[in-house]
Length: 320
Image (cartoon, rainbow, N blue to C red):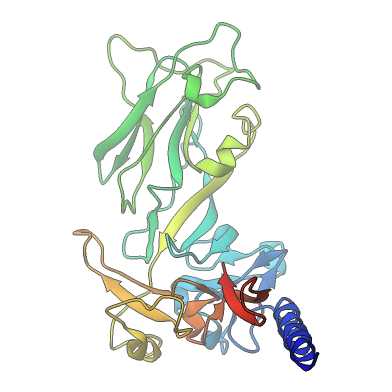
């Protein structure tokens, strides 16, 4: 009887511990004393909202965000003046969604081009973006540094643009991928003798780079009157050892990743890409949090008590 009593007490204690772990406070996403929300957008360090004197809230000026009356209380990257849709810190790609202009391909209309990110920590994401042209029977091309790096041609649909027709059918809309690590992108028309060119008073032809997940959930007909669309940028930190903001990160540089055991975040420098060296930080597998705060990550695992059929005592088992 005494043995069963101990089993019950031990099980209840474990159950209470597991329940308490589900009620832990949210993990911090920004530096202490810094604003971490702007119009519902979570601002995660190394990005930060700050004016003069608040430099500790962001890693460097590229990551400084304005959120005030002049921006309509929307998060805007100060250096690029681009509105932010969301910020993601993830093992597969640290990224930020921003709004980029739609380029008109029609004569006598201003052809606004996407931002040039040369010399910045940002590149246009190959994984999450698609070059898209809403057009009819002419070749829309995407170029970088005056070199054509991609393009697509759509077919003309007799009934014009359709809300229900997905872009991947090629009717009045076409898409293609882009190369990796691009910092400069321009959309234009490549005229050829066998192709047509846009024109006319009702011309609606346009091209743009776009967050594919967002675009899939949005009809291309719906963007007819939109001047900008979401685009995904991948980012890296400046790893210049002379930079004061980089110095705290040096002790977190690791050659290997610890699984399930070490909550300490680690950072790595990747030089495998010939055109771009990246410096990013991570939580070890099995942990979550913002590794750029250089604070311990939190384990994703919880403890669940189990009672063995063969032995009259509970044991612990970890679940993801």
